[in-house]
Image (cartoon, rainbow, N blue to C red; front, side, top):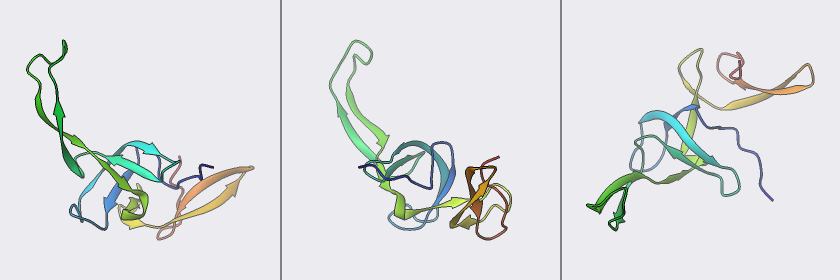
Length: 107
């Protein structure tokens, strides 16, 4: 059973743990079933690529690996601070709320 995550594709996040601690970047992909994210320019891993028609040279590429959702914090678009996420109901719809400034994250 996949549980929901508070962080979504396109969100700006700050890495709070691991080798890339302190970096701020955008979420490229989210995997709710495993609670993992692909964050731009974070957790770069080397991938060995065999020659193909698209890449006849082949070689070793650097691609983003996944990072666990517990190792990042959402950066609020209003106050630009890394924050925890609250939830609030508005007109029957659940919206994410910044715990520091109280403004809606989903606009």
